[in-house]
Length: 298
Image 1 (spheres, one colour):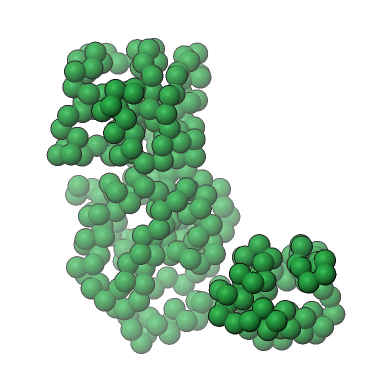
Image 2: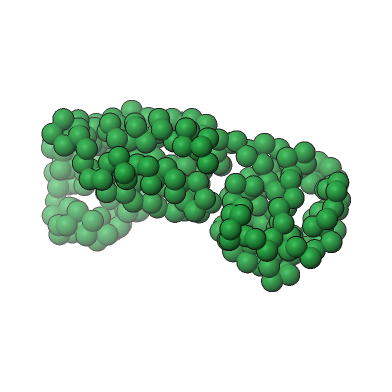
């Protein structure tokens, strides 16, 4: 048994049992991958994969256990590499941040600017996706950090910490009847078509619950994962927008009015997550530690 065989099993599982895709990711041949897996199965005395002809169709019960251990082993291999990098090249490396669009567009820029000034030799990568996708990228090792409001704390493989709290607000064009409203209510909001977030993003489930609990029906005419898209359609007159208050930009959104929703909608908390048991490079720890103070200075 060797680490290469462990890696092959892991990659096959990550590529949904597609041998060709796994071989391509490993920069080797499909027959070579198959041979290494067969040799490992022979040594263990059990089959790891269920086969139909040359195709892999599932993990065997033994394979499920092997994969769980393989994931832990590979995580420790990556930790050893990080330890070496930390002591040889402390200020060099790569930081990959997985974040939703709102976090990447409105929250991360000042933190990224401060980080790159302090660590000019660290390569930065920002990956966007749904909260579930972000969590899975950190768990698989594709990203170092995930930042989102939903889902992250549902994964036992992740360690989460709160970053900041926020509320939803209502956005309308300056000439909209609600723009001069002194006392905003859920009923007044529901009188208009609504443009807001997709179900998996930025507190949308909490919004739906708020209206449902109040017995107020809403007409959501358009959903999006991108706050800027929501504001675009508000400008087009398609409906009023319900967005995260932190996603308003005073300069770019001069033609819109933001109505405070803190008394109507529940407080939301955006979280930062890292993979449990992962050795974090010094610059990753520094980024995490400095993030709250940078947010407070916005």
